[in-house]
Image: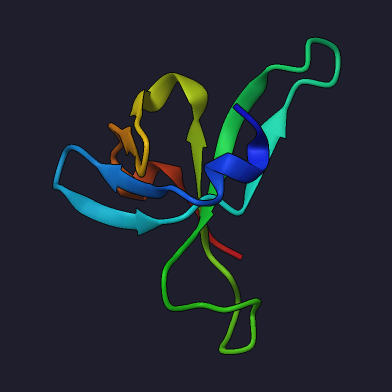
Length: 84
């Protein structure tokens, strides 16, 4: 799977069935090339036009399943929310 394909999938938190948005970036290990985390901007903020951009940095280990249209994750949102 390509990174651009991840950007077309909605991220759903299975703990509360809440949509977190869509991945906009990935964090990867340059030595191994493996993805370490996906980065999902908090919905409602567009490119910091309406204030600072907060984002979820979700470790790859928290991804439970990647389907055709969605990515299921299991996280405590406040723990993985990175504030700008």
